[in-house]
Image (cartoon, rainbow, N blue to C red):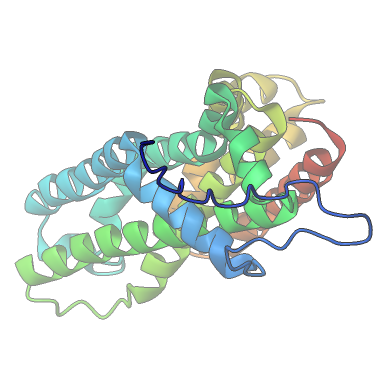
Length: 280
């Protein structure tokens, strides 16, 4: 008598990975057409999740608000007869602008340093879209943080002195925030072109500091005096001083802000052109 044989379970048919000629593979995963909103969401996730953002913006707030409050506590109402209440924030911004420059460089150069830029461009092959998203997110973050810190110093100073000065100070909040945010955007564009954190930060420190130092030497020579005077008029520390109405009653920093906007626009165009032409 023989043992009855149980029928073996029928194995599922193996998938046919090699499709027949003339047919195409259809992914079961839904494919969504990407747009700038996805790139903005990705860059926002990056900038809020890295430690460099916390350290640079934390230091910026500490410098602007901390120094601003200390300076405001040493002032009297007579100091604001013809100057805005936001002047104490100027002293913190002189140092705080370095934080925004550093963050602007790191937003793009850190990805080149770690190699993550290859993953980014694989996920989003439209390189111009990635750079545009970085510029938009960084500018928004830098402008909001700057405006809040400068405005807080202005409100604190006005509260100390009963706020009865007739000088409007809302415009200084917007212009100073725009100026330091554009410096950060310029740093981001330089970082995208150089693709090296130390090199880009050093270049930006030279852009900010050299025009403030060189006039002392250039103005010793009669032939170079005009160049020295222009550098002294348009350098970053003097531009911020004019925005806060320090040292000049005729100019409120509009020309200096326009020059920085033009230089930043040229650097951003250069960053887009080099991004498309070079390999990663």
